[in-house]
Amino acid sequence: MLAYTYVEQGKFELREKPIPLLKESTDALVRVTLGSICTSDLHIKHGSVPRAIPGITVGHEMVGIVEKVGSDVTAVRPGDRVTVNVETFCGHCFFCRHGYVNNCISPDGGWALGCRIDGGQAEYVRVPYADQGLNRIPDGVSDEQALFVGDILATGFWAARISEIRAEDTVLIIGAGPTGVCTLLCARLKQPKRIIVCEKSEERADFVRTHYPEVLVTRPEDCVDFVRRHSEHGGADVVLEVAGGADTFQLAWQCARPNAVVTIVAMYDRPQVLPLPDMYGENLTFKTGGVDGCDCAEILRLIAEGRLDTTPLITHRFPLARIEEAYRIFENRLDGVIKVAITQ
Image 1 (cartoon, rainbow, N blue to C red):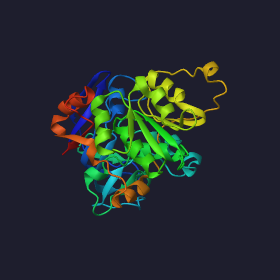
Image 2: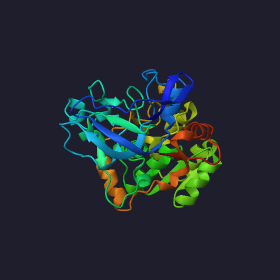
Image 3: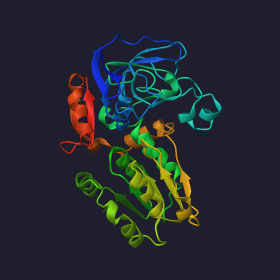
């Protein structure tokens, strides 16, 4: 099969590899029907994910059809259309039982697919702990509708859930990339008083204005003043930082009112600094960490009900054989790209 492979820092390559075999009774083999490229894949390429193992097949955003299952798999069966969770998790350890599946203590727990074990930018993928990591796609939901359930949509849903958004709140989302838009969609489910999006790219800002006209949009250089003018208590009640830059990390707490919640959704490629003397007396609550992707069944239900729709994010489509071109466009943000669908 064809598999896009992490060769060494700065180098991915499309290679022929054997179709994966089931290793454990809890594994499933999935034939990938649609995949995508994530910014986290670029972090691997550029050496910002030290735990990534050279030689692995990259990719962790995918849907497909179950081909084989191990003897202990009961939740899915061959022929099922499924989403694949970005995280693999045992479902039994302390962290899994409390919903913190990103912290699963299994050797294959957490973000393993496309990082520490072979992922889904390939024709087939082996999924450990299939009962936890796969969710059946409801009839009437297309592959494109379900494509982002296991990663960026789960990230946005998790972030909105832990941010304690209330009906009277002003919510600021920093970053209108793919994960930022997914976070916006999930924040809208909470029906806050207003949502403000801060984005430096005019193309992405226009995307938000076009698709979500009720959302206020501002630029980073105007954000602090804009948020204060459009909130009741000197800043946003909830801030979700999804951009991942040193400047946006600082902007997040600067735009928050005293006693606000600041949720860090972004993945950074270098350490950030909390200027505690400047923040003294602000009494902010910071919430951080990787996505805990345990809400996929609920997300699929919301998609089936028409309450979540991420298909506008798919701006480009390429077959797996042309994945190099897809990466070039996605990495360099060419041609108005937001997300790329990789077909078989």
